[in-house]
Length: 511
Image (tube, rainbow, N blue to C red):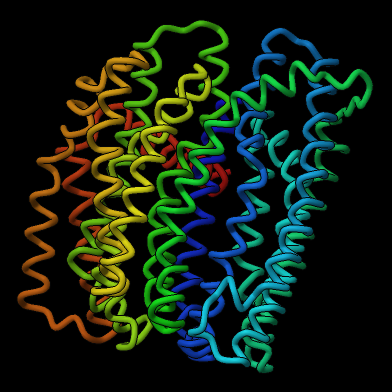
């Protein structure tokens, strides 16, 4: 059943993502025009600032699966109940602290956002912050139930809910925007939908998974152990906030909401790119923790990381090379001429991110081995350098300068330092990993040539010609990868479910 959940989880993740992409392609241009560039920039600016309150979790959530797996391997049900009780209490307290901290931010809105916002924008900002802070505060205790579902590998339910959210969210948002409620209406609808999802998770945990909570004998020793483990994950969270959100905050202070809107669109595209990778690696988190808890050797972990990494690399390169070739006309057709500067910003974000996104499983291996401290210290130094570099770059080059600072930090931190650490300290064979991953390289030659020829001989300025070029490029990429790049395992991942589906269809037709 576990294998089925893993495969179904990955498949449903990609179905959900492709649904999201398709809906986003249709919804985002309408949303951008109904909001206006300034309002969209304001929405992104407030979101980036409120997201810093997410640091109040101190990384505790990432530690849940590790400690749950340890108790599950030993079949210690009472300890799991105590773990659930402790996390619920801790996250409820964090939720209250988030409300208090958010209230202080609302009171000091002018000081937080600087002088570039107009009086009307400041008024809207306060309303947005109140709603977003409430949404974030409720998500803390609710995250315990989501983590429990993940730890039990119930990916079908989890991904189906995600899919429903992807479809329902724009269907609810469009009428609200058409009625003129703009960013405030968007945030209200998003909050109500989030609460519905959280309640669904809670009901599933109680009715199907029979979750238990024990609030007796509050284990301070366990809390200390979780806190020590999570402290370095907390540092990683700070780093992620600096790398992915500080640019928007700096742009808001130095350049205004229009610059934030352009960068925000690029950040949105980057988040789609990142989700292509995490959709695969996220379902392997319990598996990695169980392998480490059972004492499996480093070569087995390396093979798992390589199998997952190759699949991630192939998917990322399909989208990444396609965006390099056709990204500029895509943004022009999709978002409009006002957002053309999002193209170089997106490239500076997604190209360096490809290395860590191919190695996501390595992060989970570090956590499972309790060896993630080094990564945290390295990343925090790189993030500080990113911040120092980005301020003058943003002042001179705007959003492109901010993205360049992030790109430099990612290349140094992930491309060089972390690969050294994986190999010489964690014990993973990174020579084997990259040798296997880069075997896909020759398969890129043919589709890239096809893409360049399409750009040369086809005027990609209208929706039909753009879709035609995209379809031809995708088919050429898949064919080349199948014939040259993929190994037997990867071909089986595609061929086996397709064969089963065709067999079932044939049986039903004949039967």
